[in-house]
Length: 507
Image (cartoon, rainbow, N blue to C red; front, side, top):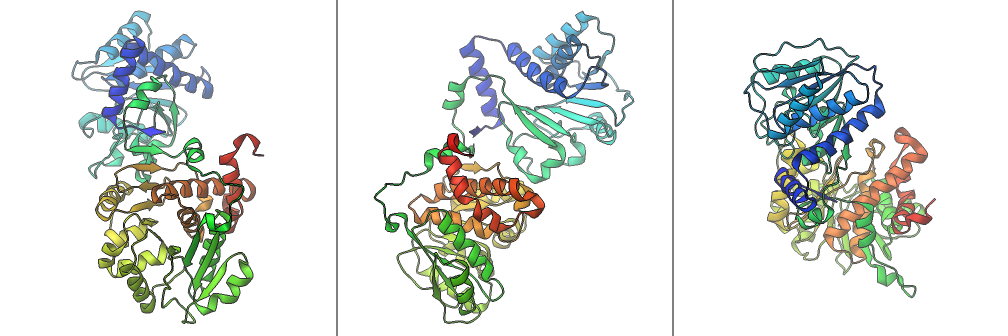
């Protein structure tokens, strides 16, 4: 599924209107109908609803929603803010229709607004400014937004919460000057700003409403942003020939573990073998030998000379994954440096491999092109400098993926796979229970397993993240969020693949 920028969405609207021979007002009616249905499915006509409409098309949407609600017996209080005496044509048309109704609780504000009494028992519908906003709010609008936020009412925002940009805020947004919605209804597509943690306070829960934009137009308009979905993952998965041997599914070496951290090697290797690699070898310090041999009999163990940490990384023709539980001892940093300086094939770097590199940042230039790195926020900042928002971190990741020629898996609530060609794939699956020790080690095992099986680095990253999150959601259904541990995710990897490949037979 594509995610579009505001300019792309305007073009899709325009072309859909042309192809379907409708008007922009007709499209507004579709949007209003969809929002009204959602409102009516949640609240009875007796509910006090206050609607704030701005002067643009977002305000037109809000006025149309008000009219739909009135037609169904609701009695909303409607406030249209028109301080510059200039409404968009479609907003003006909806204003006239409300005026023709003779509805008594409709007020157009042309000078200063006297705030109505608002209470926590009210529902507020925010239609002040939508995704077309090009500047931060000023003056009286800031006071209005803060009054809405302080009211304690349940707030529904149309399109995007007023004051929030739909793409990037670029550090100049004061979020107390943005409507804090409890529920946001976006039209046809989620907005890019929905996928950054710092905006969650404004969005609340969000839902995308289908307003029937032309599917052929959407297919033709290019985008650099995509949501990973089951259909795409299913298409990417390779069929397995019935005469296959383990050599057809690749050999993987996972360099992992240190004293007290052998569990990371266990989890990543278990995940790799569950994700389909033909053979997995774990290179670990001697202290991990018994644990690995007894915990994961399906993998082979290659012992380092050091008792407590990895001090040398053997070279072979296998695909490599470095990092889980590796530690940052000097001998390990030296081993990572020596290995990277002699490597040319794509590999997976996670956790302590990234921490080792952050202690010698010149090693960033030695990462083989098309490799995959999988940092969480703190690991990313150790590598590339401190960042204060997810948006800042993401934009830096886009630059570094291009500069270094690597795939960056930026882990978080909405994990983003940033490719060196500028394409971004966003994962929307997963749950808070996956924020548990070892979850990242499992992801490393899955992604590196797919890389060993011959998937391209970009595909291995996107499919791996999706399977990992789907397995996490399956584990949640059994163990709950609080009870979910990383091993539960491993146990559901096979079920996740099965569901994607043959959803009709999954039980």
